[in-house]
Image (cartoon, rainbow, N blue to C red):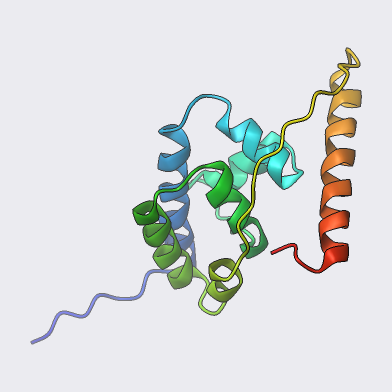
Length: 140
C-alpha cells in the first residue's frame, strides 16, 4: 500500500510560504518590515499581514521581486519559498520567476514632524517611482 500525502489546503499552503518569509525577516536586521513596507509602497501593517502565517491573506505575485530584493533571500531560501508559493498558487509563479532584478535607493527627505504627513510623502514617492517604471514597460 502506498501512502499518498493529501494536498495541503490553500490556507495551509499559504501558511507554508508565509512561515518561510517570516523566518527570513526575523533573521535580518531590525527595521526590515519597515524597509519592505517602503519598497512596496504600503503600510507596515500590510507587511505584517503578508508575512504572518496567522493571516490567510496571500502575497500578491507582483510583490515577490521586491520582497526577494529587500529581504536579501539566499538562493536556497528563494527556491524553498517559490516551491511553497507555487504549491499555494499554481500558475502565478511565472510572474515571480521572470521578474526583473531591483535595487534599493535611499533618499533624504524633510521630516514634517507629523506621522501622517511623513507617510503621505513616502507613499507619494513610491507611487511616483511605480508610475515612472510602468511607463518604461520594465517594472518587472
